[in-house]
Length: 465
View 1 (cartoon, rainbow, N blue to C red):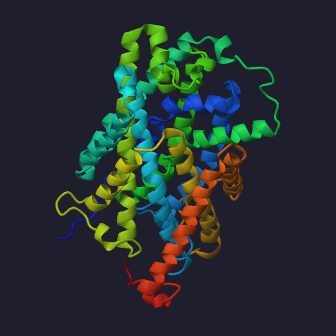
View 2: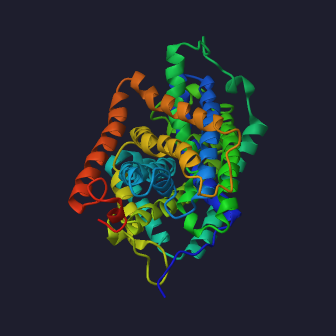
View 3: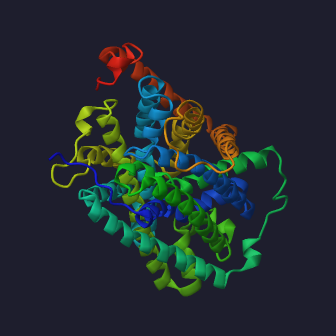
């Protein structure tokens, strides 16, 4: 019997995978640059803008995930909504293409964040910048090996890591609420709320960083072929994880600034900038607590990278199974029944991406993903509703089409915001350039392999790379 994916993930497993991915290292490394975007606690308005955007887009993902469950998530959504034999082939190709330029960056950013907290425990590490990069790459390699097993074993390990994540964030939040200094938390600089052009630009750039913290609410969709009752499980996991993480991340951020002055947090190179949670705990309980929270953050980040690599390893596999990506990656492990070749590809790219800078990685990955995946999915949902009525939709977006339109406007605002910052255009050019290169690569491959638009629709379904 041929190996096949097993539907073994329930609502609790799916939600834990999403939340572990979403929380991860995000709030522990992005609070300092978020505070710097507007120069004070008013920057936390970005959390509310990001939460609203995530909820609106989450409803898009929930409807698509329930209607089109299968390994690959957004790849499946784009392919089916735009038409699997024509434009859907191009959109699916572009998703895989941009994913190779953004997905490994996301995983690598968490690995780099782990090294930042390791530097709090091992201060001499900062003296060896190349050692830091190799260590981050090594972390990705260890997680690759950890995932080289059956999905049942992965689900059990994921629950352990998820519980560690909740304990870590819970300790910070409870401590912050008990020890908070409101005069520090609301220490706004003069003219903090001017609501001028500079404020809008700063808010947009802060939202870019906030969205990084919300990435992952669609993680369960990449495992759609391994989810039990996907028509129910996927919407529940998406919505519950967004709501829970919105509360957790904001309370974490508020706790930090209520104990550690924000002006200290935004000073690049300071201990508070590199490891704000460690400094936070050290101020309240002493050195032992700083060490303890550093170790717990490392476990939390491990859970994040674990969940990311788990989900993302299914994307090249799904595309290869479909004949759009290299067929060599569309193979399951003969005994453990997981896409081992696809996992090795993603793990290898993550190790390479670990040699770049953290802030640049976060901005580049958000913008590179935005046009094809997020904007593409919203347009795909409109097409699905209008022209693909034969596809059942067990979950329907509330207040349609308002959330989808708000998400579309929000994504475009996020995409254009870096343009007003010095050097911001390079990230927009990176995003547009990767899409343009992907279009050219698709048409070259389509011409060479004779599939759409260079072959009849009846032929495209049988052609592979």
